[in-house]
Image (cartoon, rainbow over all chains, first blue to last red; front, top):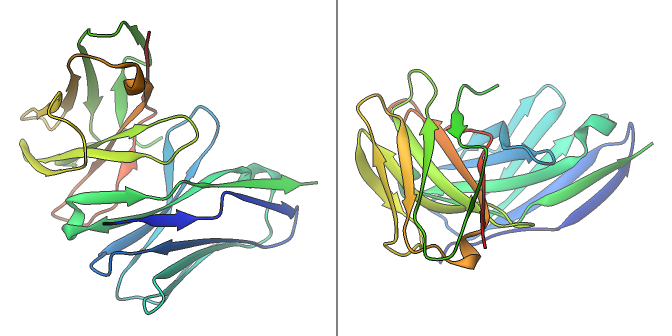
Length: 111
Length: 113
């Protein structure tokens, strides 16, 4: 079945880069997403990448996709304390008839 | 702000009762997906409605049902509530005809006692 895995915790110092990793199992994924969730809030769409792309950059965010290894990463440049949150990786399969989320990576930014 | 609204914000029910949660989708969106997020976990896909018909379903029993209305707002109904149904219920709207970016509402926190 479908499965998305992420490491659960990451700590970085303010100003450093953060790299959050994700692996997925379904090779028919069409879109892959990164969402951010702050305490008590819903999910905020940060960025997404179509499965035929290798990289996407959006301001401080860079998404890398390795289709062969089914590995997705999110790099946040110049990490700020406001970036502290839980980050979820998700894949859309069956052309969006099913979405699978990972367990989330809790990013802590230390001053 | 995504333009996706959910009501109510919080709800407390007892085991065996029924509950209806509501979601208004973002203007221009024709698809609503519902998710259950238990504490400390990622969202689990319940089902999706596209143009008023169920378009995909996750691994949830039939006591989880839904509706989508002509204005594309949606309801999630849960019958015979169980303690494990306590969770944050999220809806996400999108326009399947234009892509698969989903925008989430703030969620409804359901507590079953």
